Amino acid sequence: MFNMQGAIFDLDGVIVDTAKYHFLAWKRLAAELGFDFTQADNERLKGVSRMRSLDILLDVGRCAMNDEEKEVAASKKNAWYMEYLGTLKQSDMLPGALEYLNYLKKQGVRIALGSASKNAGFILEKLGIGGLFDAVIDGNAVSAAKPDPEVFLKAASALSLSPSVCTVFEDSLAGIQAAKAGGMKVVGIGSPELLPGADMYVSCLRAMHPSGV
Ligand code: B16
Ligand code: MG
Image (cartoon, rainbow, N blue to C red; front, side, top):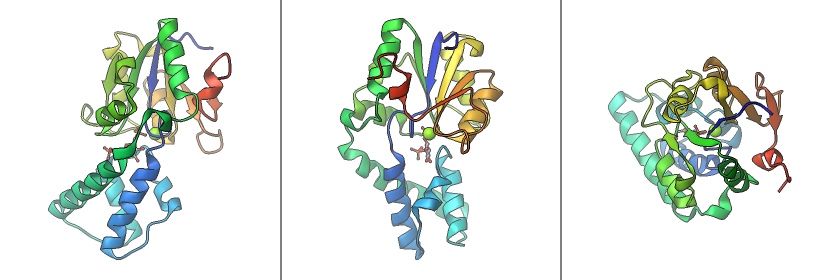
């Protein structure tokens, strides 16, 4: 494997599948606005910021909103999303994620979160894994969205490590581009066809654990 002194994890699609809850909330907003929003449309929102996601949704429904209306709509969607997250628990983590985090911890690898979500702290708390992270850089801490490397550079810096000894785990194309732009190794969670540019690919974090848990 790579010289991995730091491991930086994306949240949605890597540690936990929150995309299904985002989908329910965006679909509810679309219904209120009078149009349908499909699973295929939802794929376009993965790894994308909340406000950019709203723009994509409005594009799907051919709707226009001014900035004030957008703020109201995004807040409404987020309230529904947080309500859906209410039942989230540790057993909802993606296969092998908890085991791999614990394994890295035992190996002395420093661990950070690098997510676009402004709800990352809340989600880590619901999963009961906040204590495993040496640093959390989320949507509240960055000004430039992926594929800009800011989130991962801030994560490496918070771990006091050079990007060259950090490995990023990502499920979105913009995230892979961000990690490469930051000079890090990147493991794509998914397929090379959908996520070109990663250094290696696995279907989930279970495949990273040496004992294959
Ligand atoms: P929030 P990640 C991303 O998480 C999601 O993939 C994306 O669908 C969402 O719009 C974004 O977080 C912002 O989330 O509304 O909670 O701030 O993959 O970067 O961990
Ligand atoms: Mg993701």
